[in-house]
Length: 147
Image (cartoon, rainbow, N blue to C red):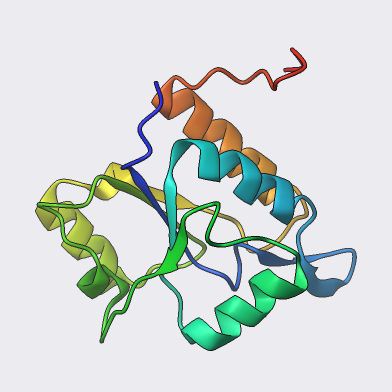
């Protein structure tokens, strides 16, 4: 099931960065995560980072945002302000939505679209990828047949 119109809304702090091995640092596998995600989804950052800072991060990781369809979604008071529930088919990957944002998702009947990531641990991107594979019924084998 390949739906490249579905959106992955992605936070940065606590998702791409996490606490492990005694430091707050980038999680391993970020580039490969975006390579995989770009095959199946449109990725949009929903974060307090500014778009220029996001672009600098992507460029420093050699992630080509154009070929992978990576963008940025503006929001105001709540991250859910940046989501259009009638138009956006999405998952929201974040480590810590505030209660008002969770309430908004519940009001829309979309609370199951929130994929909570633990800000502590090195393998959170692998875990959220596996959860998405399961939810979407995506074949987990790569081009070489490795699962």
